[in-house]
Structure formats: structure tokens, C-alpha cells
Image (cartoon, rainbow, N blue to C red; front, top):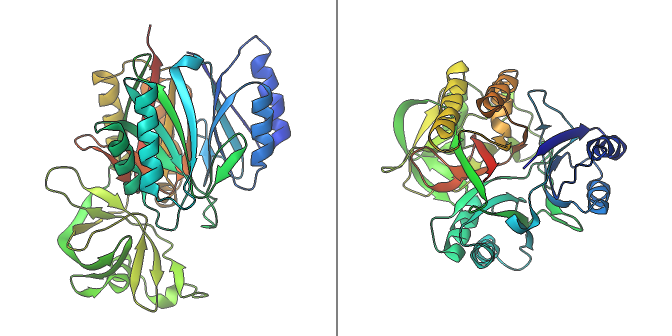
Length: 381
């Protein structure tokens, strides 16, 4: 399987780059597309569809095909995967829950292949319930499914991330690339490298992804104190405001590594935090240290372990990296991308997400925040 990557700041630039790719007789069947929601999504899809190329796509909060990070642009990975090796599916929630459409996806995967893997991109429903998507796929498939992917972004405007394919796009949609693992090897890891700090605290009041109190103290006040901020430091145009600095909470578990939960918004009226994922009442959490180069070392080491133990060579690599990492790491982000790419030395595409789906080193496939999810693909001989 051969992969080629292209990028552009407009549909016209993509059209030119695509024609150059096809000039040598290369005939891709599939396009992985990550783009700014400011780009003409429909025009890009129409361009690819005219060439008979199926589309797996998500809007982004920054995108890349190498260590150079693009903004408000379009990046595409083209793959000439055999048509019988994959199936694309787009599901719209509508009146159904995230769990229900994900369950349908799991059932479709099982129906099409004996050993399917699911690469997914989801919109951003009001509940932001990535955990329900994982549970639904597992329920429909029957457990033990391979699941990797990301939640779409929207250039950090929080107005309308979309999953899409040709002719279909939605903020509450789910696009899935179902791949036959009997034909294509798929291995990956969800890794973050963040180190915990301080004593374990308890979530004493929460509902879904909203945390009201931590150790019986207002959650917003506690996090602001940890960040060294006062409310006067933040512009307060609305009751709910961005915290600005995305330092994740680490949700501790007894039998698995901690899963990250980003505190994205604060509510000044009820002093609550809006997080990018559920935090059950009674959960144990710790704060995280600010990132340094050790974080990147951990990510690269865990990717290298996947290469050494599971998939020595790759035809293509897809990277779903939380936008919070980008905001926290700054210029270090490019180094992380470059070093991950060098692990397999294969074409790479990625974007900055609002949540990640994948399997941590010792955990199960689940929904993450502030994590780098890397998946490598290799067609079997």
C-alpha cells in the first residue's frame, strides 16, 4: 500500500497538488482529510470524489503532514488501499444518542469483516461523550474492538467541529474507516507523558463532564489557584469562559493508567469546570506538572515499543493529538511530531483534536484528553 501526502491553503492548491500525485499513474482509493472549518469542505470533497477517491474527514484545530504545523489549511493523505479491504461509514446522531449510532457502527464492522479495526472521527455533540462512542462500538461489535481516532476541531472557536465524507458532514456525526485486519495490520498507542503532582483529590460533586466541587471546594477556584491565576486575570465577557492554560486533570484508576481530562471552561456563577470528557462523582484525580521534553521522550518511547513489539514497518501513520498539548507545548509540538514520524519513517498525517480515541500502553481502548494517539498501518504481504 502506497501513501502520499499533500497540503494547501485553498481548494485550488489541493487540486494542483492532487494532479501532480496522479501524474505518474498513482490511483488512490482513499483520502484521509483534515482541514480548517474555514476551508471549503464541500469543494475539497467534490474534487476527490471526481477522481473516485473515498473520503474520511474531520475539521481541525491545526493540521500537519510533517513537523511543520499548518493553520487554516488542508492536509490530505492518499492511500491506494484495495477496495475490498475497507468500508467507509457516516452516521448522523439526529434523535439518536452517541451510544446508539456507535453501536450501529460496531455491528456494521462485525458484519463486513471477521476482524475489523475502527478508525473514527466524531463531531462534537452537546454531551461531548466520547466514552459513549467507545462503549457503543464495543457493544455492537461484541467487545475487544480495535478503535483509534479523534474528535474533530474547529480552530479553537468551539462553534462547530465536523466529521465528514463526500456529501455528508455534521457536528453530531461519526465517520468511520472500517479496515479488515486480516489484510492490513493496524497498531497504535494513546500516550501522553504527563506527570502527576500533589496529593490525590476527590471529585465530590459532578454530573457528566461538569465538575462542581473537588474535596468539597468549588472546582473552578481550586484549579485557578493551582494555575496561579485570579479571576481578574481573565477577560470575563461571558459567564462561561476559557481557562486559557490547559493543564489536565489525571483521572486515576486501580487497574489501568490514569486517563487525562482537560478542564476547558470555567463557570463564574456556579464555580464549576466544564471538562472534555466525563468525570464521575467520587473519582480520584491529581493535577499535572507543566510539560517538558520528558513528556515527548515518553511518547516517542511508547511509539517505539509499538514498532518493536507489534509493527516493525508501516505504510502510513495517522496522529490524533489533543489541541491542549499544542497550546501547552508551543514550539515543542513540532519536535514531538517529527520524532514520532521518525519512529516508522513513513508518510504521516495528523490534526489537533478535541479528544482522542485509542489504547494506552496497559489500558483498554477508551476516550482520552490531552493525549497523543498514534496509529500505524501496514498492508500484509
